[in-house]
Structures are given as structure tokens and as C-alpha cells.
Image 1: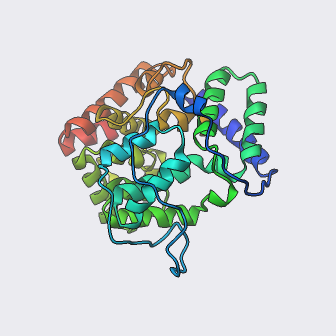
Image 2: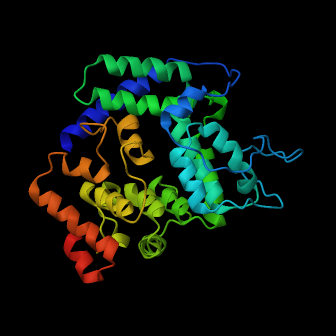
Image 3: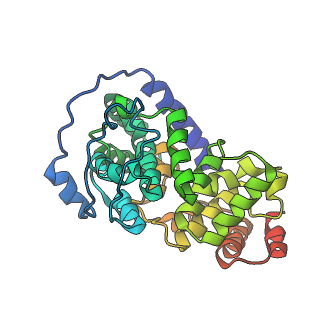
Length: 325
């Protein structure tokens, strides 16, 4: 895992340097070719569609603060499935806007996820494609998997342009809206972004407790980055599965076991590979298989498994403390 992380740092630095070189004006957004959707072999769950522009006279951006009269009938499960499966995330973004503006917590959360997922493409579509070509030419061991992951993001986000790329502040605002509307996953993501709704020990401890008690796989995965090395030394999380890279992996795996999509083409695997350069050896591995295949020492693998059991099976605080020390 350490070696893979080193590669990730190098790749991220290359990507950041190259993307900053490109400034691309907004362009027309043609619908993706029918062959792209057919190649993915999936159907996007039908959701109502709406233009992205804010309500007339609102004086606010399309990102923050909208509320209208009614929400859609789509369930959270349908919305989450659409995010994982849709070959055209720009169209899905439009279809979620009615519910998001009506205050639907899940729609607001997924709107933020789409913008985050597609931001690398939106900031510079041409630059993203050129970076992919350059990374592919480096001949890395996981080059094929990295190319496939970046191509997947490129296809799904093909209609996004620079004006669609949110700033960090806009993304935080979007997730604050979702969290205040009731999205636990958005609330967890804010902690992982270093922008929690409240910044005190009691709040952080309570949030982690609520996420674990919810058994919401989306919230588990959203919280995972906050429970890794970032949590080291945090007294609010003492006695929890927290504070190490292994803990972050454990929270992700726990999310997978609770139902989060973690297959080869899932958003989780794509994020690790396309954005971090941490890729599976082949295109058939899910997240758990990938972790087990990541040359982990046996003792690390056993500790991660114990942590996952604690998270999924709601073991006692004493047992949690045993694995987090």
C-alpha cells in the first residue's frame, strides 16, 4: 500500500501541473453518442428533468440556497443507483435539480457528488484528455487500469465545461445544504473535508456514533477519509476505529459490506484510481479484493478485518478501543 501511495503522489503532482496549463472556454454540450451508453450496458433510472438555471430573481448561484414547492418521487436508493450507473452525469444532474431545490437531502448530496466526480474533467476537458494520454505514455504498472478509470470519468462527464466546476467553497456550501436538509452522508463528508457543521469534540464524537449506528453505507464511505491519518491524536475519537491509514480502509470496506457499490467500475474504485493513481492490478477486482491484493502484511490485513467487524457488527466500546490502539 505504501508503494502505491507513493505512485499516487507522483501522479497527482503531474496531473495538477498539467491541468493548470489549460484554460478552455465553455462550449456547446452535445448529447453523448448512443454507442457510449450502450457500451456501458446499463439503464439510468428515470428521474424528472429540469434546467440548471436558478429561479428568476433569486440572485443566487445554481449551487446554493434554492427551495421550491415540490420534490420528486424518486427514492434515495434510485438516486444512488442512478449516480453509479448513469453514462451521462450531466443529464442526471439536471434530473436531480427539482428535488434538490425542493430541499430533498439525498438529491442535494448526489448533486454535490456529481460535481465533485466530474470536476477534474470540467476544469479543463482538453487538458484532462491530454493528461490521460501523458499518464498512459509513462508505462506505469497499473497504466491500463488508470487509463480505463480516467476514460470512464471522461465519458460520464463529457458535457461538463469549466463553468460547471465548483470551487471548494461552493462544494462545501452544497454539502452544508444537504447536511442541514438531513443527509448524514453529506454531514460526514464535511468532516472529511475539514469543514464540519460544528468544530468541537462532542460534535465529532456524536457524528461518528451516528454514522456507525445508521448503517448507511454512503455515510460510512463519506466519513472514511476523516477516520484515517487525519484523525490521529483527536481525543474526540479515542477508542474508535480511527487515526491510521488502516482505519480509513476499514471504514471503506465496512461501507462495501453494508451495501455501497464497490465493484470494478464503482465511483469508489474510480476515485482511488483516476484521482489517486491507486489502481487494481486488473479490471475485475472489487475494493475488498483490491485491498487484500495490495501487498499488505498479514498483521495489517488481520487488523483491518477486525476493525471492519467492529464497525459492521457494532461491537462494544471496549472492543473498539482494542483495535484502535
